Image (cartoon, rainbow, N blue to C red; front, side, top):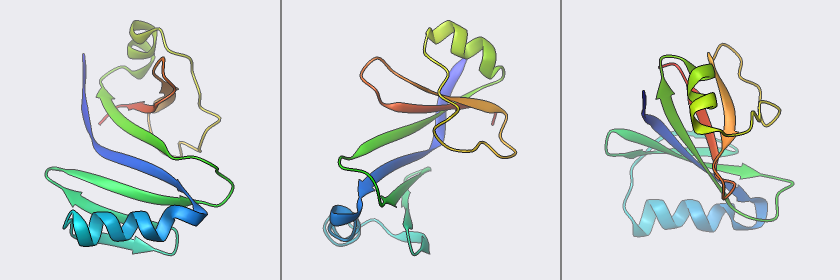
Length: 110
């Protein structure tokens, strides 16, 4: 069984990061709950929206989190490629993968 996770990340190129953060903070009205030099996390209902600055990126990527009790089985069920090279999964029981359009998915145990 696969269920929605608690995190969504928007990976933003350096030249669009401040404008994107300002949009979600000032226009949408989301409240920042955590800030670092390269990341602002906003409360988005029961979820967290992470706006992450990526220095060597030319376009925006949306990354979603999904939960499963068995990430290996869920990856097989989805028929999606294993993409664990994307970011380290330190201490996380799961896998990076993607949907057919290229949206990155973190498929992990809650």
